[in-house]
Amino acid sequence: MVDLRQLQKQIYQNKVNKGFNVTDVNQEFCLAYGEVAEAYEAWIKKKEDLGEELADVAIYLLGLSEILGIDLEDEIQKKVYKNSKREYKKIDGVDIRVKEFDEESEK
Image 1 (tube, rainbow, N blue to C red):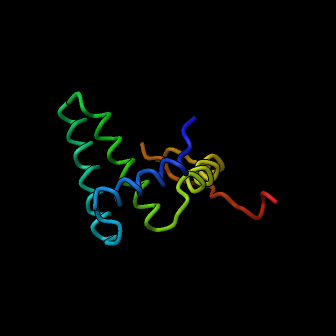
Image 2: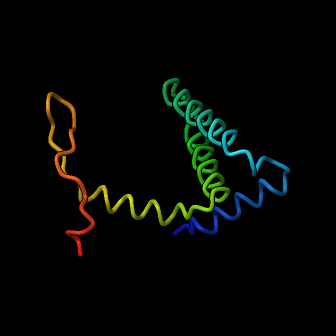
């Protein structure tokens, strides 16, 4: 299994080593957004590099998380758990959340 915490630090260190941005959060969000657009274009056009484009998205998210001091692995685990406790109902073809995760009721 991949250690996302270690990978997050490795991605950040690579940015530092290469002289890439590690201070301008706005720029990092814009670059991450651009990578999502590239991945979407690769999917739409059925390009062979879709996996690589998705990897770029993940790399930007991990790097941004390290810049912001966020443990993305921990946040993903908490969010997956939270999503597993939500309930949805399909209304007119759209999934609508009908029950929200309640942390207090879990205790």
